[in-house]
Image (cartoon, rainbow, N blue to C red):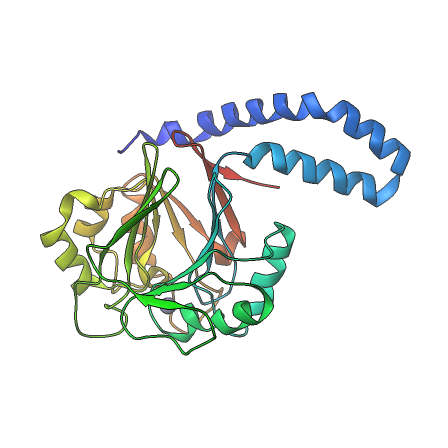
Length: 295
Ligand SMILES: [Zn+2]
């Protein structure tokens, strides 16, 4: 379902802020008293933790972790399950672990790997060494064994966890590891989210020919770090996202994201967020409203 940008934009964010503030006010009195007793850092920490708990409770959380020139997203489902979509590079493992610790994630129920390139699957072993991981789903080439049960999935597979639905739309291409990226659609309530890994124009064309009505999504994790070889005008028009997230490092050697991709997104009235500019990005969805969470 596509909603007007204003539903997501300033008005929705403002309303959401007001609702959050009302909730915070309900808990602020006892917390301020506790802070007075505890004094100093511990009190402030308690306030921040309570405010965050209130804001995120019962919502689907989508965290796009700043892992430099790589992809790593954490999903926390309304029912509490924790899922990673891609795991960054081996070198970014520590940054992911520190983000997971900040959000009290001490185990992962599932890891979904878009494809077996270092900037997407490189951190898997780091995560598996640091915490229990329930299983790995992957498309294309199998990742190296890390002692976690793994299962290959392909276009047509789908599953649900609580009210969150996962549909694997691709890969449909057979050539090139980038184009063999998993295309993952997630639906929650009336909102949908599309993760395309590093899929490029060839895969996008096959998706448009095969599943055109399933591409429409409110949030798009932009393909291949915003490369000019992905995100064709036709593909972006079919997705028609309100929010686009590009995961890339500042001044990377590939020139990602490409200015053409960013302008194609902006031409759709889409809010473009970039980890190279904003750092880690967190979005919340209650099934109707999609908003950005800023701590
Ligand atoms: Zn990549």
